[in-house]
Length: 172
Image 1 (cartoon, rainbow, N blue to C red):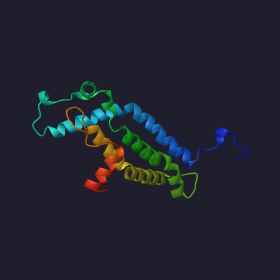
Image 2: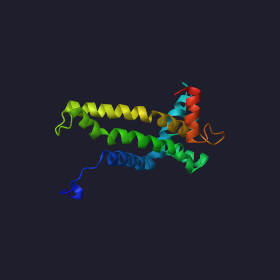
Image 3: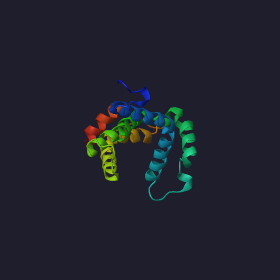
Image 4: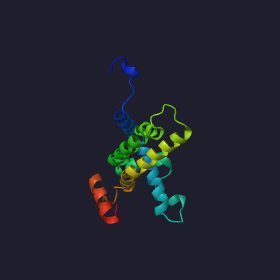
């Protein structure tokens, strides 16, 4: 582009889309063990029913859950479901953040000054679209995080198999 410096050229929708997804994936790589611990703590409460005592709890707190998982299942267990988690981040963040400006411009018909209504509508649209696109990946991610390897077989052997099995047995 003649007359523009490299810093003056706004990023394209593709760059925004890929940049948002990549940034979310990097963040997910760092925080994934915390998310896995959260899921394990949540399902522990469900599996123990209404009568729950402190002595029957396998996991205690986030750090205790992480340490227990590493000790009983190995360090890799903290990253069960990572592939689906990265797929979720790439689809969710890419759509939600990466397409926001394009959708906002669509609603404002290219005007430079978008009002609060247009911004809310654009955010709601991209957020709803992102949830619709990313929901299957979130289901698979949580299912992998919830399955413990110690003392039992794995329900799903791969991410692709999990998508197929869930679609076949439970419907889309």
